[in-house]
Length: 308
Image 1 (spheres, rainbow, N blue to C red):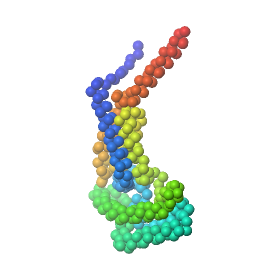
Image 2 (spheres, rainbow, N blue to C red; image 1 turned 60 degrees about the horizontal axis):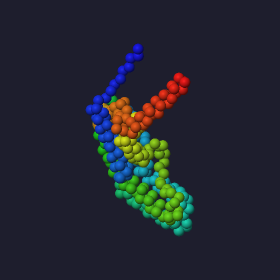
Image 3 (cartoon, rainbow, N blue to C red; image 1 turned 60 degrees about the vertical axis):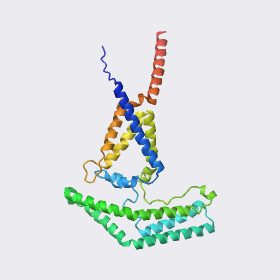
Image 4 (cartoon, one colour; image 1 turned 90 degrees about the vertical axis):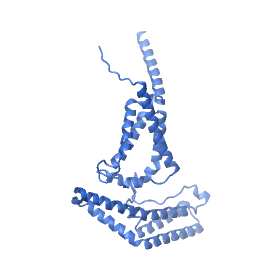
């Protein structure tokens, strides 16, 4: 005699699972649509604020996270001049266009030099703050004493705010120069594709990559969960994504942002995964029924053949 243990869900439990799946799906869908409608960078500030033992992993995804390259006047000018040469070759500019590009580049460099001149003291103060931060990070005493860790965190918060203010203007000058330079191409030349200013030593998976793909990820996960299609795959991907958010703000770390909402939604997703919630009022249920009919039909045919 073979013993079988079977768990069955009541109507209330099924309704709750369907509602939970729809709500989480709607949440991901809305978040994805927000990012599509307002396509501004969002990963950089989040990743730069990572806390805890794996913070370095997340912060390494940010190109020039401290802004040392962008706040290096000579390095930036040399990089822009190199971009100018690449742009001219990319579009195969005529002599007239090349002269216009030289004027655009010169104007951009003058704006940059004026900014560095007007903000030289703040830039130097910020860069010195980075050096002090690196010294603090290498000092075991400051990392082990809780009160000192709190002091370092407060100083780091002020320094990061100062850096954001300085880099906001520099970033605008980068994008403005890139746009004005590309605008010199004719409609025929523009078919070759827009050329962007490269980012030296950028990580393979960067905040820019996240900004580009996370909206599609959120949107896709939202649609799949809402339809109850491939629920276990979509739920696992979403749960791991939320887990990465929790890990970036390691619970208990000084200065870490509370991630209770993400933790609750992550465990709710594991419930959906474990129960196969897509089979209830979802496309997964239709697929499951079709597979059962198909497999049972084949099994019956095979048994008849063996009996005959």
